[in-house]
Image 1 (cartoon, helix red, strand yellow):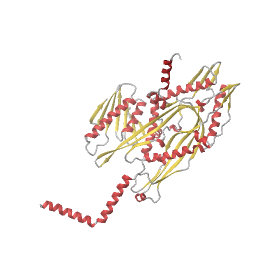
Image 2 (cartoon, each protein chain N blue to C red):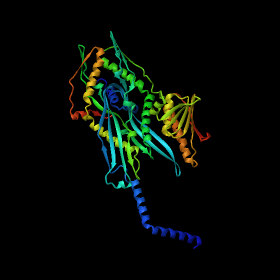
Image 3 (tube, chains in turn red, cyan):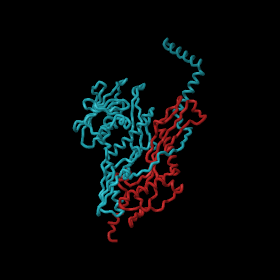
Image 4 (cartoon, rainbow over the protein chains, first blue to last red):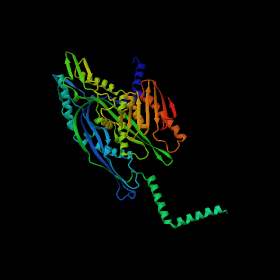
Length: 191
Length: 349
């Protein structure tokens, strides 16, 4: 080994964690190109009621229904497309696994119905958020049950076909993968 | 014993006799008060409840062709403070929300026209549509994941909704301030070049169409659009002074501010203050903030609140200097006036 000092310095530089400002930038900005091919909206109502026969009902009722809307997108991480091969006017492409994500959620404040009587306190924004979080958890758990992957994949193929046509290329896609229930659950990612 | 002491003892005996006569009513009242206090203080308001999450309805499944090139994650904090006249003077109540937000910037590929790609000899010219916000309905925050660390008093449904709306607007403003658009354009150019290079193309020139409407121009086309999009209304007075009127009745008059500065000042006022008049005037390198109280306090203002107000004003000036007026080293003065326009105090920075 001719230059061990250089090698050690290089290793130290490569292994040291990025500085704080660098890390913040990495956390804040994500520049991975993604092709979204399907978007939809899920709506759910979360109802909170006093337990029946509760002693608290002597002081009044406190019930609420919170409607929640979640924006869902299905997309492909383009950085994971590997092994594109171009030959004879054809581009051989294997699409990576898609992902399903919840982009944003909105509590439909105008449609909240609450019934607070007697001495009970009105619902606070924090409680509404807590209920909405339960709705979000259920939406997230149920995403794999909706048929979102097939139309998203069809649209992805059509998009790539349309984009490659001016380039004089005809895309040839690898066989479509069939997903089991467990596979679909893996496709749901957090924000 | 003196006559006075005897008189007091007599009164005490009469009160004792009265209480003894209605002892059962007094006992019931005491128990009711004790239970109420226990209920309010000790029992968490969210226990013993049944929470049912209803059926999930998927609506509006639509295929889309959007290429995201940049995401920006951030937590935005919005708060609102109000003063209510209480028994011992003004009670200050505050609500504060920390909302996670994500902004996606990229291209809507369905807007590409038929000549988006031109190839001649060894060179390739690509024309992309303008960078746009890809979030559905331009909604960036996640209400279900927000935190409400402070919530004092009772807030109406409209005020709670306003928190999310302002968090969304604040995130859009921060995106503008951090120049995310040009970063997205740069990243988009790089992405398309990489994709075409992997397909064997050389000499690639990527052109991105300019944005049709700058989001910095927050003045909307019509009053109804303004009311829909913002928690305040815009007016222009006859002398050329522009005015924002908030839903809570406060007014902000401004002169000589850019749109971005105006937007930021408006957001900050809405966050920190309520139901009063403010005037902001920029003369070259100096900015005057005049706060005129709309109503007189029912009780004389104590010294401590005055100091805290001055501190709040100084903090606000610091935030404005740091986050809003980035372009030049400016000097600021905060003038506090009473309802008749007489100056009470002023602080500078």
